View 1 (cartoon, helix red, strand yellow):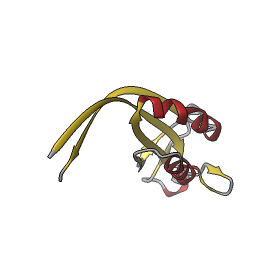
View 2 (cartoon, one colour):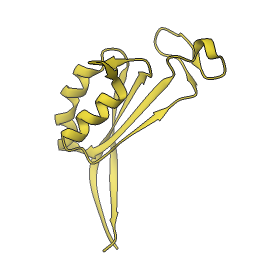
View 3 (cartoon, helix red, strand yellow):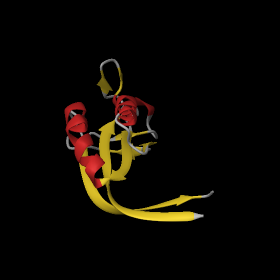
Length: 111
C-alpha cells in the first residue's frame, strides 16, 4: 500500500434542495461542473432539518415544510485546484454559503 499526503482545502457549500441551475437541481449542476473541471471528488449530503439566513425552518418531520431541505456539498482538493474552482462555484451559488478550510489529504492506494 502506498500512502501519500499533501496539503489541500475543503469547500463546503450550503444550499437548499429546491434551488435550481438552468433547469436542474443546483446540487447536481455543481457536482457535474466540478467533475468536468477535474476535481478529485464531491459528495452531496441531504439534511433532515435546518434553516438558512432567513430563518425558515425546513424539516422532514413536517411534510408541509419539507420541500427545501438543507443540502451540503463537500469537495476536497489540492489548494491550487480549489482556487480555480471558486469563481465557478461563486457564480452558481446565488443563495447559500461557501466555506473553505485547510485540510491535509491522505491518499491510500493499493497496488
